[in-house]
Length: 246
Length: 324
Ligand SMILES: Cc1cc2nc3c(=O)[nH]c(=O)nc-3n(C[C@H](O)[C@H](O)[C@H](O)COP(=O)(O)OP(=O)(O)OC[C@H]3O[C@@H](n4cnc5c(N)ncnc54)[C@H](O)[C@@H]3O)c2cc1C
Ligand SMILES: Nc1ncnc2c1ncn2[C@@H]1O[C@H](COP(=O)(O)O)[C@@H](O)[C@H]1O
Image (cartoon, rainbow over all chains, first blue to last red; front, side, top):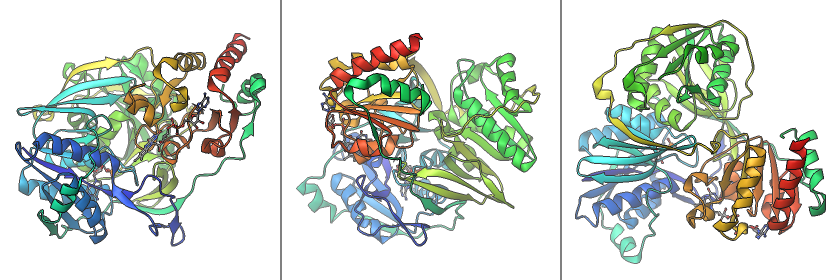
């Protein structure tokens, strides 16, 4: 089984998010970048599925400039067999999905895994766009994934429940928590990562259709109103008369 | 031209998000001096669809077909695109729901349209260019996004937009698009519904608890509080990691993002990753025994106290209030 795992490079979850250039750009000064946590789940699942190479190979792909390489190396250390970087700024999901689709068309993967969304721009767009561009099924938010022969069984979340569905390979699956336990690279993995194939490809021309022009930080709340433990009725009263939420 | 809006239902009943997106689409149509047209897929009665006329929808395309009873994003996307083409829609609106996330990118890709997901404001237009707001960095920021393609696809964030009544009269039209068998790439085998539960992403009130509750056996009072309030239940990540509660309840940066009217956090410290998923809630109440807990910094109301004492009192007080 040939698996492609799409990796995005995002600010660490503890990052304080600030903007620069008149609030038109994310300020990455001093920010630690990591593999998008959902992509780490996708990668861990892929590594489990190929079972040390006995069942196939895992290729990781990132659309990004040279600064994403430490993140890609970490993916190799976790257990991917080879890496591809498409050398460009990832302008928007349409742009990124087209770049990945171009690569995927040429290499015939049985399974393409992404995260359910990237925690920076939260688009949740790439998995289903990839499915469409490749004319294959896609499931955007999978909580469980099993593969048997040529068939994937996927559990997907729905409002107020879950849905179990099947699809024949090839399929694109956007993974959420529950699909796999994230793996941590060990020393052997880190050493081995250096000698794994790492290809750099130039992008195809695609016009981005959306862009971020301006950022604000959400309005801060006023100071918290503390209510004494002994005065619980006052909380109920405030929720009714002041906040008007009950 | 027109604004097309995809309307979701659960077993024939329109979802709350259906009225949100309908109202949102009709506001956009109003700005554009166009019609807002809805498309519904699956078995929904005309009487149910007629409700959409209270929200500015002037026409409803209804697609009923025995093969479409369960959700297959490829087929649904093809149908929405066929409807968009038939109605010459230049804007397509969907909910940023679980299904919407699987559907909208396919619709956008077929139309070669730009997609803004999780919009929280009505777009403003400057000739062909639309601009609107959405959250980014898991609610740590609000971004203004520009959408430049001639056809535009927008998904609306649940609970972010106030439904507004706008009475029109809607004509209901059977729509029979061609459906390609190759679009049935996924097959639904089973749907498991927790019928007694309020859906977390759509809930107006959420009662959430964390590691401060000590163990799964103590969730009875959380569920009772949720029941009194008609709320959905949620939890912090370590709680679902430990298996005390299902993963589907985990809110935060790596879980579900919620923006209810009221979020009550009990025994949750307020780590940055947790806050990222809940900070756009309109009102936040924090109950924590540690006055230094970071959650108090972003709360509207706080009680410093032991959850095991405070929660039962709160349940009693709410019951008394509801009783009146
Ligand atoms: C990559 C990454 C992603 C993450 N994503 C998420 C996420 O999406 N969502 C999320 O929630 N977390 C996430 N986390 C974890 C997060 O950093 C915190 O560890 C977690 O939110 C803490 O959960 P908690 O508040 O329940 O537990 P704790 O931090 O242990 O807090 C328990 C709180 O309960 C209080 N308490 C104890 N006893 C009582 C009592 N009797 N009555 C009242 N209060 C009491 C304590 O004072 C304390 O404040 C993530 C972490 C990482 C590294
Ligand atoms: N620049 C990128 N390079 C490779 N994969 C990406 C990139 N951006 C997003 N993805 C993948 O697409 C998923 C969804 O991202 P998004 O649509 O941006 O929320 C992510 O979890 C990644 O798996």
